[in-house]
Image 1 (cartoon, rainbow, N blue to C red):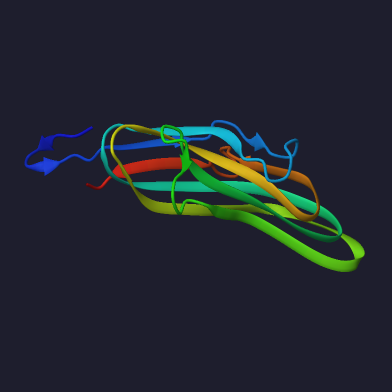
Image 2: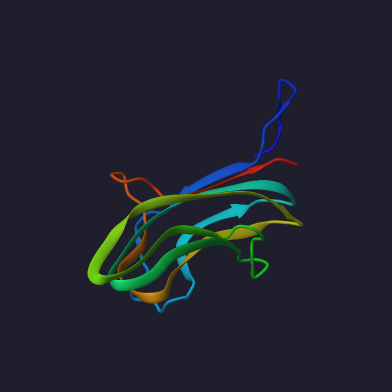
Length: 156
């Protein structure tokens, strides 16, 4: 919403939380998945986009290098939002004995994005198995361990 109140400009802003976890394990390594988390930038301008992405990843074996990636996708333009890619979580392990590593992590993205008009932006994620396999991979969001969120604020 824009406008003035006592001479102050009220900024356009918005916030959304991922309503449920997204399981990336069934998808092929390297496949980008629409998480369902989306915002709409209402008009032309420069926006700060801010995402907190909670990942959960587990791998097992004696030799693996696996990770979760996230990015923002401009649905309207059909393109990646520049500089929005990040590694959410990564495990690599090489040892003769079998092992299992896993856990949760949070990655943040904070960028400025200039748009010529209204745009829809969504969060996408992928599981990457460079070596070895994962036994669990996903983007989490709940009231116990924390939400995966996406928000915007117009700055110009």
